[in-house]
Image (cartoon, rainbow, N blue to C red; front, side):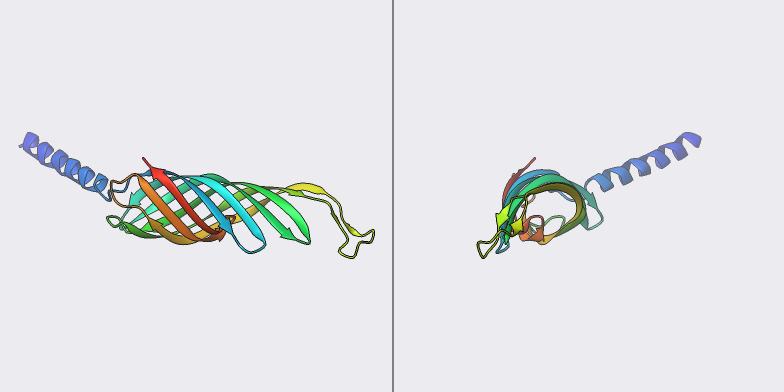
Length: 168
């Protein structure tokens, strides 16, 4: 009797574990390249992302680097290293909504500029670092069990971006 009870108890745990791991079938690692613009700023970047299936969506953990140049009276070159956390909807579909939020380390190189009227005014060169928020919201095309991802959306520091990548 005890053996039968133990067998039934262990087989129900095994079934529950198997069912939990079968949630979703998108490949869970991706590496993508993106380019972006926002009138006065242009940039590009790389991103690694890990998908974690949960209920009817995926949670994401991301890390990457973006470079962008901002031109408005002065020129600033930004290098941003970031980590973020977010979600992707649709477990078994190929069209997804994605959103994430995180924190980035921004290294800013501000170039010297002269006065717009040719005088002695203007700004001097500067270099500084700061923490900045990292956010994005967009569309993602990633078919189940395929090795290609296409992303587009709006974010910071990605700007108005489009990107392609591989999943593995």
